[in-house]
Length: 246
Image (tube, rainbow, N blue to C red; front, side, top):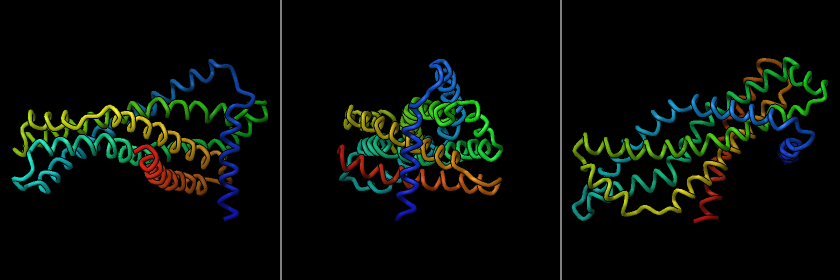
């Protein structure tokens, strides 16, 4: 318990230090744009593949569960849309990104720590947490909502194409089911989750990498912890947000 409180204290102190003795705004603008591009473009392919097949599988599974004539076919589109927007797009995509983005950030900062690059920044009087971590956080807060919007669209597209190709449901009926249950709050809820998940994944990965001590083995261990703890944080916050906002 004491160790958990110790790590939580260091985590919040790290977040608080992001806004102390900052560099020029131009430095953060350039860094944020670079991180947003790397995170967004670098993760686009895995988001595309994951989302299309999640939408397709959801359509097939839903059609299997609703094979009774008591349910209208348009209900398949309704279920695929609702689950995709409110759960699959933000949560599954974030879990995938926790593995890719979280491990990358933790290993990058961890390598900088063990090679004493971070120590060199601090010797020069630069606030290393603000200089290195703040652009990553800002970039994630921009890129994650965009990626998750793309994921939601691709899940709808994957579900629609799978239903049409497999002869499960015509695209017009699928679209009708989507429109029957559309609620703008669902999109707002998805975007709120994307911002929270992006912040948690990035900040936890930065924390794990920034405070590495040792060598290559410790950097690898920090990357593993960043992924595991990021995924746990996503699942816990997913429940808290659902309980609070729904």
